[in-house]
Amino acid sequence: VSKALARFFPGARNQRGAQGGLLKIQACYDLLTQQFVHFSLSSFRRNDQAAAADVLPLLRAGDLVLRDLGYFALEVFEQIAQAQAYFLSRFRVGVGLWETDGRTPVNLLALLRQQGSLDRQFCCGDRKVRVRLVAVRLPAAVAAERRRLARQNRDRRSPPSAERLAMLDWALFITNVPRSVWSARTVAQMYGLRWRIEILFKAWKSHFALAEVPAGSKAQVEACI
Image (tube, rainbow, N blue to C red):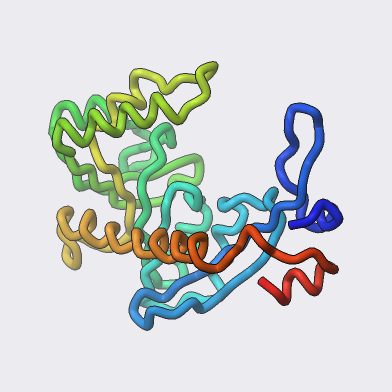
């Protein structure tokens, strides 16, 4: 958005300390009805983790929330479960894992190397949230491409660790959907549905002229979007 609106929608600061105006759209999409059910507008500085709880007022018992890593917030997963709803997310490597006793730490990489694949209950993070972790071994070519992208996308001053690169041999998911409902294979297949939101956002960027928001007041720009 125009620089005049930067005080309402501040963007990231550059090396000179300057900032432009950047507005972020958050949206919730219902895969069953194929409709958007919620929108919100905020500054660029309200990151996706901060927006992770936006879905909570929309939840009904039995709903399933699909999440990518940007929205990985254990306290929100906990609240989704408390609402008698379900979540499915990729697992963030580096988050602590414990056995279900909540006291015995787990070396996930060592466990994966020993067993090859995984489908077990753990306690996750400082909150010790009970989750089902599913690890699916990927084809060697797919894992190699993931490592290439990881090295390419990271800041050269902070390259990915050897452990993180090794973990890219697996697709890692956490959920509270029980094994009696979904097999490990179904977990991976269901997560693939999340790609639909990426396709929709690509369509927005290609056809909605989002880079051509007219100048105006805060209210006018919000109404236009």
